[in-house]
Image 1 (tube, rainbow, N blue to C red):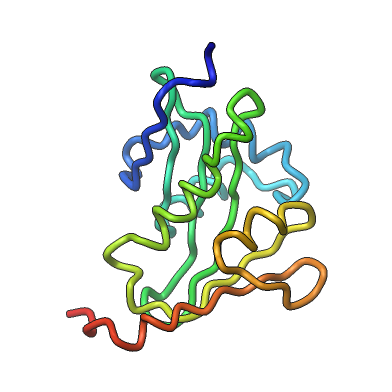
Image 2 (cartoon, rainbow, N blue to C red; image 1 turned 180 degrees about the vertical axis):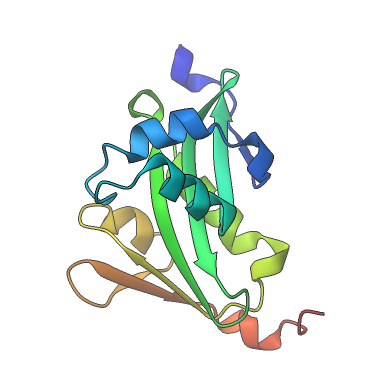
Length: 145
């Protein structure tokens, strides 16, 4: 069965399939008519996580951050054929666990329909769309150099 194959997560931006990701994001409710150039700039300025299965990209997430105090999760998606396998959680956890993100205390995101997924990852609702996760371990992590 196709969607039982191994999932690989990478934070290497050079592996992002920009055509595939933009094709999805251009049609997403949150993209607000984002152009291809704007999408590429957002990837360039973010820490990204990509999910791969069957030799192709099947998911994506990125975080906008200062790497110290705040992180904003954006553009999370998983291909319809690969959903309900925990891939979105894997993507977010790859961003949470990234070495450059260990000092970040406050993680934010906006969603209108995926609250249950994010709650499992430690996020709580601020209002009907915004959620936040506080990483208390960030205080004890050694400062970045």
